[in-house]
Image (tube, rainbow, N blue to C red):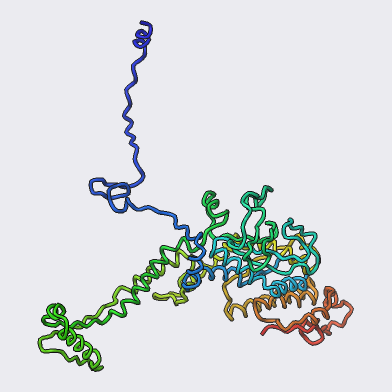
Length: 491
């Protein structure tokens, strides 16, 4: 009774208000017409799946060796990221900066960095080991312990030549946090066989970055750049090969033989006679197109038209170019097509993309490498203001170089005339500008060392109050004029 009484006292539910709101799905679908995703049509059955091409090393290497497009996709970006070099922004003297650049050339460090990027893009990961004489590879890198001449170069090992320690990860907070602490070199490597390398001694490059669970599936490496564009590559190569096969069928000739089925069914001398007849036609058909056949036979010639095939190849090439992040002019080496098309816009966008990849993929490794090279070549740590910028890939024309040379020369001479810099500093600035302009390249270190280091005394150029008013003092000669320091002016 008490339970029945409580149910009677319970207030009735309030009626739902019609607010006019409706829940919708953010896509279009018409189930009656079977249009849209989710309806019973072919598009609704489409999905994406894993290719895992990066795990198949043999197939990746076959693609790189046999397909020039795969080679260009891997090589172009890696080579463009390293071919222009860097410009040092530091208080180091020009002589010390020259030593650093010379060390990069002597030990072919840019080539090794390029190889590291190539194999990272091809296989999904690669490391470049810094070879420091007299130090153990399995110990953390101590920069202060690097002496002059100890650094010997880089050794590039791709992901299949090293085994990361997946159970021993970096626990110190920093950019390497969560990555393998050591890399064990396999027995089949070209050098450092069965040696363990500490992560602080390597410059690591991944291919395409993966999310966490996929990264675990790849032993904490990335994926090959060829994996994403595999379907576009197959479509392009299939279309190209199919077009090549059509060339053989561009001109087909047909002979209609009366009673052909009976001749084939009978066989024997009749079939042999037919074969001899066809062979005679093939052998004795002249270049004028004369064909000898029986009066009851019929001869037809069919030709295939290639209209629209070039447009289809172009479309597949553009899709492949977009997937490779490389413009057609760079990937295929073809001139831009279209009215007033120069390709400058595409190349500028490509160069900006290269700059972004340099900042993300290349700068950390080059920064670490410069710190080691500076200690090995100069014998001391780099200064606090040590920095660098990647040189632009865009080449200046002769007119642009001449204009830059003129402005640079005028600026340097004005600073010298104002007494702000010495003749030696002026010569150093002019020689440094020769890397961009090509002017003042004949200024040698001997001329620079022979120049005066003191700032010019500008009081000598002021007029003397006791001097003869009619007498005018000759101006002090600039560097390069007679009586001054030997500097060659720009034309």
